[in-house]
Amino acid sequence: MFQYAEQTQKQLAELQESHERMRTLTASMDKIVKTLQDGLAQLSKASEETNKRLNQVFEEQHHCKRDRDCLDQDLNKLFHFYHIMKPQPQGHVLDNPYLQ
Image (cartoon, rainbow, N blue to C red; front, side, top):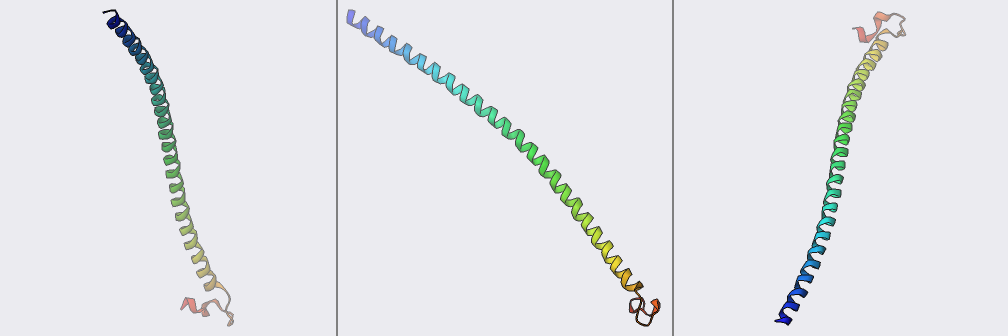
């Protein structure tokens, strides 16, 4: 009986030690999970900010393309007007083939 009590005490001590290790391990895992959650939150925020900035850049590119297209059209009109108005060898603007 004494041997049984001693063995039970030993098993109880091992169980308590194991329980303490599990508690420590659980606390460590909780810290890891918290760190991962914080990291994911930061990544999510950075991703949102990046997407916002990308949308701004795409919008700016769209405006630049539209402005460039308008400038191209204006430049074509100016060249056309220049060819119409430049003096001809005959010396008269109305002799310009662009006007006929």
